Image (cartoon, rainbow, N blue to C red; front, side):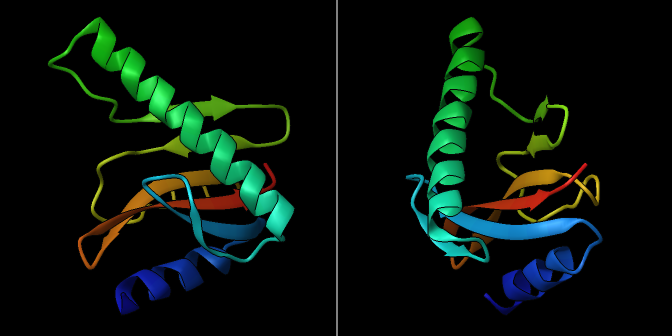
Length: 115
């Protein structure tokens, strides 16, 4: 867990990062540096979106799986990389979603930042 904490600190220190949310595989926020309403909103909406995207990929081809998802808006960008075992900051001033595996418990990490 110390490795995850260290990674979160490193990500939080990046220019433009506004906050970090850690969400379990059921979409429940475990840790956040943002206020409760923002945390809940991002956790719920992104969790549902990720599940739908993964389901769509598998429905098209049952042998396939979602490996990367990128959503770009005028203000932010969301990148999702399910199944990774380490955190990566793909773009330092974007929202980044990536799972971490701490104590064999998969988590979703969300970093909110301005574009």
